Length: 131
Image: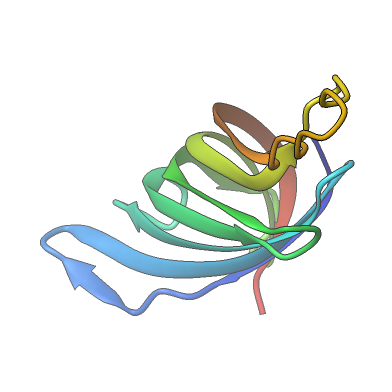
């Protein structure tokens, strides 16, 4: 569950009628630490619906990664200020995140930590500012 997020995006070109805007960001997640992410967003207009692929790296603990997609809606309340609502679904891998809770028998090595893999949905509500 994030408790803070900061991202920067800029349009870099067009594919047909769609604008392409890479976005780099950092999410602060409870219990898991920061995630550095990169998204490629496709949109038909300056406001309205957008979406695209997403990838990220967990930089705390043993690390991990996630890959998936995001989609959302953005609008403006002033020429430089607006809001967005965004959902996502990502396949997430947390390295060495699961350790056994049962002590090994005497003379036996402990079980090595295992990765945790899961599909993680997300929902973001936020404010946008244009420079």
